[in-house]
Length: 291
Image 1 (cartoon, rainbow, N blue to C red):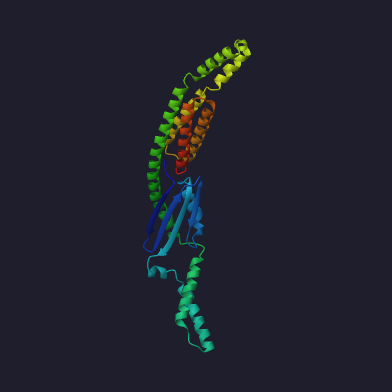
Image 2 (tube, rainbow, N blue to C red):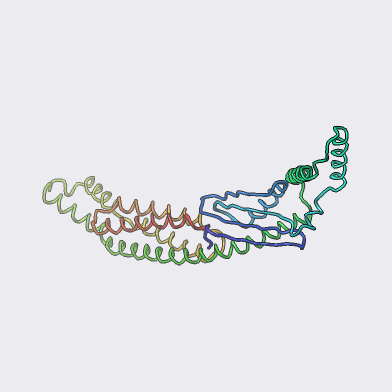
């Protein structure tokens, strides 16, 4: 079992370029991937989305990636020197025609700014950088996953205790409801004999007494509760994502306890049902943090 809250950070380089990847997530019912990529690297989003969708199943996941050259020598490799020389020569010709000095410092700044804009508008990243980004994402996800596993272990321990408490409540309800149907049938028959003796032997009335008493039978609800609780144990032992399945099981358990509470007229049982439903609501909130 994994939690949905986590953080992972990886820094990788190839001696020339450095890539930093940060991944963080918070709980959400479905998987929602949000990318923050450098300009010019947006074409990688599809590959990264497929990579992460194969490993993550729920949560609001934010992925931030930055790319930078490691030193000035590497940065200079990105400059188009022939183009810069041509632009500078054009500037000299303009200055000569206007008979004014060449503004070298201002020209250098403008050329540098233009180069940054061109670099930001590139439509393709270098193949080596693409591989570096994928490597950084894989390392960040590994750390991110390990932290979610730690959170998942804590959540699993808490949920196991709560499910055990539910099983104890179910056993208590079964004990208190034992013989309840027969008791209701006997009590109704006694009331008929006491207040309407002429109907006490009427088959139609006796049939209604039996049907009314049977409505208090909660054996089916108790059996289904047992089945759902047994299913939960299998979910905990399975390594597959468990959040959505646990949500469904809790919803079914809540339905069974609601039905059980509506059927019973025993005050002690009604109190236990309320406590069980309160515990189920707490568990439903906790499961929102499980992948």
